[in-house]
Each structure stands twice: as C-alpha cells, then as structure tokens.
Image 1: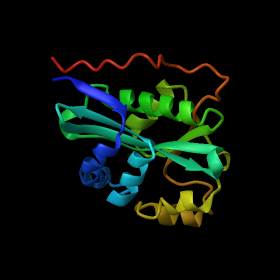
Image 2: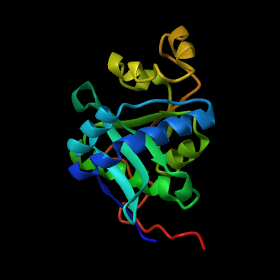
Image 3: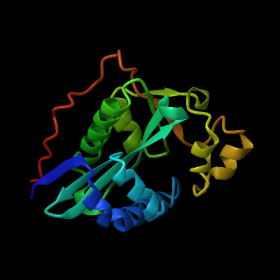
Image 4: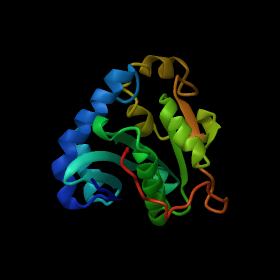
Amino acid sequence: MEISIRVAQPTDVQYAEAICRLIEESAKARGTGIAKRDPQYIYQKIEKGNAVIALADGQLAGFCYVEIWDHGKYLANSGLIVAPDFRKRGLAKAIKKEAFALSRRKYPEAKIFGITTSLAVMKINSDLGYKPVTFSELTQEETFWKGCQSCPNYDILQRNEQKMCLCTAMLAPALKEPVAFDLSDQIIKPNE
C-alpha cells in the first residue's frame, strides 16, 4: 500500500468530518489535548491551501494544518493526526515535515511553533530541530488561546494567565538556521 503525502486540495474537504473525529478520538484516548475541531474549520484550512493530507489508496491516513497568527508573524502546524491503522510507520513525522515545508514556502519569515502534551509529537518536533520555549515566546493573540478551550486542561492555562500549562511549547529553527531534516525525504515504508 502506497501512502501519498501532499498539500490538501479542495476536493479533500470530503475528509473533514473524518479528520475531526480522529482528532477528537485521539484527545479522548490521551485524556488531554484539543478535543474538537469543527468540519467547517477544517474545510477552510484545506480550501486556503493550509493543510497537508496523507492518503493510502483513497483512505485517510493522516492530516495536519497550518494556523497563522499575528498577520503571519507566527504560525503553528496543528491538528497533527494519524489514523490508528497507519501508526508506528513514521507517518506523523513525514506529515509534519511536509507541513513545515509548506509553512516555510508560504510564510518564510514566520516563527513556527507548537504546543503539545504528546510525547510522540515532542519527539518529532525535537528531531526536526524545535527547541522547548516558554509560552512568552509564542503568539499572544487571544484567538490562539481560545483554541485551547476544548482541552480539559484549559482551567490550568487560565489560572496561570496563559504563561504555562501541561503542554510543552516548542519553537522551530528560524529561517536562517539549519533544519535537522531533509525536506526531500518523504518515503514511507510499510511495516514488514
């Protein structure tokens, strides 16, 4: 089975509801994280060319979208999800690489960051050159923090005036810094 990873196209909106279900199910299984996204929100990301999708013979295998803040000064590769049948193959890292490349092409000067409670995502980010930072180094745009409202830890974030939570904040290397990966390496090998 061949897995294709590419920038999502307008016809991929057909997967929006499945993407939202995967995000919600994953958050429930972990007991933390952003639990819900509306399909309309995912439609918008796909239609604007700000999403990466992985498909295996027409089946949704994974997804990630680009979130822009402060008029392009900051962005995050968010909603990284891999369907259970496709996990443990390096697919999440390959999707993240493609989302990073998309982000750099469209917003070359933006600071790329992420926040997560997922150890797997922290490892991927670290492997890709991201470094842990304090929340003060992230966007302070209020709409970003509103996106955390569906997380069960939102009260912790609020109590700490958006300065810390259970998530780890990570910042990618600046455009002029070397990255820790080869953007051309996109081959996913099936488990043997």
